[in-house]
Length: 401
Image 1: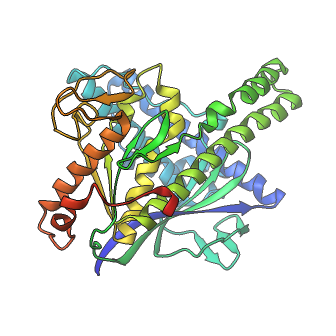
Image 2: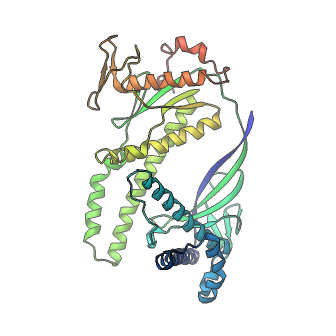
């Protein structure tokens, strides 16, 4: 066992009363006003005199602003300070993108934008101002809110974020640090190489395939119908508000379906295997392909691999990411390069005669690269050398999970 500080976020549904919801909405509106005010200040100062103003300078302006706008006093002071830090972070990201552009990367730097009603949906308590008691969350300047604590909060709470969804639901997100004793990496008995894809969500080195659920694509027909109805409604009417809610609820359902599928699959993998190998894909770069972007986003590979990694760490399981270069092109039998396009779904090696599905071939190469990586570390108790000669004969079928 060894200790490590883990960072996690616990998310719980809030059930505010009508009065409390009005207070939350008002505080959110005030925070949005403050964000836009300071953004306008930064923009105007730079355009007129090329003057830059720092985050701390703007934080020091808040007490003076409260005199002219007394309702700002209804918001917890550290929450207002966090608004300025959020704006400062947006500018830091903007300058980072500008710097990348100067180094030859073609992208739109994206100047920080003013926030409309639906573009500012959270308020933060960065250090204090909140207290959790059984099924109540006590918030400074708001009171006790009912909270659904479906599991206990572990660790030291650092930040509380209150978030409003597009369906007008409220959630409390506790960011915590856990000083936890993690188990040592287990001896490797069952191994698995996975290749994520679009036809099948993932393919293993043993030829097993998990179907791609395609939740967004399956709901597209219904989504397009209610979006057409929404577009016909009169602007700022009650009917348009109701139809917007229908669109938002369907999107929320798709998201929840996808997250549920990913959690169940990643849990099952970690529970049944001691080493899981996957590719370190440049998913952000892949989504720039306009023909595949929607399908890649619908599969949510990045979210899945993130879940797989942190669950493996907590369970003492090896989760090894490998370089994806040529994992599809290399023959898993003789290690020679066999060029193929995306349209070629079968791997046929002219040298050794191996004929298998291209995704299975890639999964085998991914697993071998991971085993080579683990075998070269200082931890040799994992048993890699013992299983290398017999890994092709080891059964890892999904039907035995």
